[in-house]
Image (tube, rainbow, N blue to C red; front, side, top):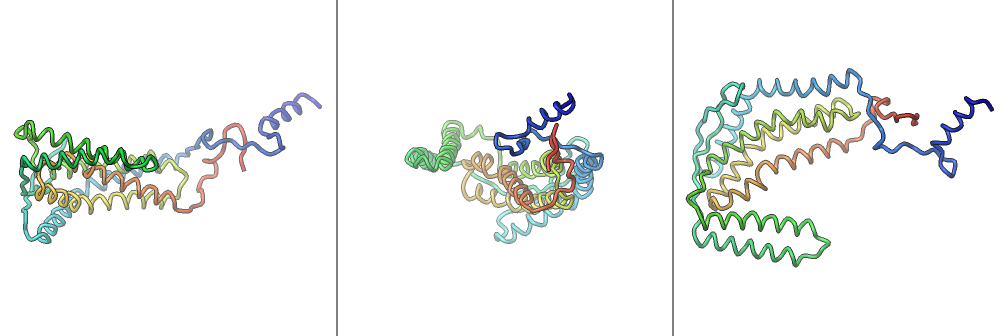
Length: 278
């Protein structure tokens, strides 16, 4: 056996198990091979989505006005909506819905009643069994947020400078920013994978379509909760019931599209380093 044959034998032994089977490379050790076509999709598709979104911004805000007016009519004209002209950096001026709806500061008994409810939730979190640990953490989070809100409004209620209309308008601005960020988030988390192109297109289309339709309905419902409740609930709704709802739904859509069965379009993208894999 010459030297080259010995080297080949040693290399083959590196990937042979004690039972004679092949030791496959762990998926964490793999690298993706990106062709120019894949780089075009990874960079070009988000850029195209941003350009289309910027072009359709007047239509998107027009849809938000229509859905907000429909929601107001559905609730018996409890509020009114006007247009607030805004301009962010280099973007052209836009008119966003400005909801004419008020919310009162909490009363003395409302603050203490919610403080007692927060304390009960905190105590309940220690009673729940260890097997339901996520529920325990959720109850504690609710209790901490609402307890801090009660303390704030008990000590200095007049210092709270945020109105219901400001909250509604700010959340819609956040969604506009998210519409521009979603394609780039997908580029980093989904477009880099060896998935069919139509999967990538549908994921971004579903996500952005969801944001466009859901945002005005979601934040009008949140505004109603603040109107019939009080500003005491704004911190809780802002932290857990605002942008987090959109983010969780985007994650759900990502998981749904990721579960679709498909055949890899680029077999080279699954090749291992230093060894060939079937």
